[in-house]
Image 1 (cartoon, rainbow, N blue to C red):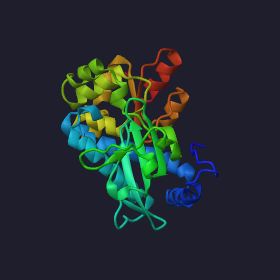
Image 2: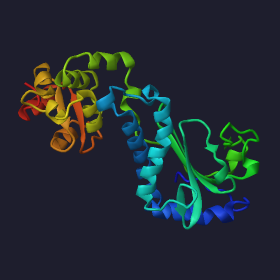
Image 3: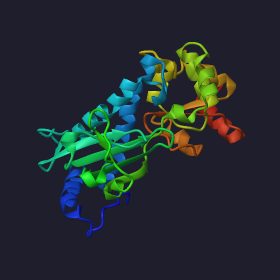
Length: 290
């Protein structure tokens, strides 16, 4: 399991054990938490980037203030998912215990004065590695660096981070598709023309890889973005004469399984150019290629 608890001999074990248990219970259990919190992180980042409306595709392209807001966005989504209230002073009340929520993008956490001595729910994500961590620690003076910034916030020392009860540690979360895509390839796709042409260029360039509706919307940048994938004027019409099929995870599930492609989720697409006669016949009979 991904959880890395503190040993029972640790002085904070008695205080943190019931808090971690209440947190995991509110999340629906550790297996559910392991699935949902990575999705929350991905959703929050994608909403901050807002690719369909901003023509930005990575977190590095956002403004400094937006990166700061990401922590607030994750906090809001996390609190709604847990169904737990805000504290009177701090961000969250877990089993009646005031707990602060702090997020960082691959760095350290800065703890405000009002959270000193209180539990902190730490979240960390890295868009390059697509790994995240979630842990709970008591922000004791001994765990924090002595220096502070101009807002009197202090960060954890290297030794202090040894006192975190990790619920998830370096756990995969859904990667940003555009972080995995070479920049020149992305530029070529975006220069292909209108929404349909861009999607056709994407599915031709990136084959045998699941592509979500979020990515389709980001590339199409149009309200009727799903129409730009389908037949009757969409990317399928552009690629079918080239022998390239665009398959939908729901409607083409049987074909995807026969071709041994995937996994492809119900709201995902995958493109594929068959090479042997049997595959060509299969996709032609399903009217995916000409």
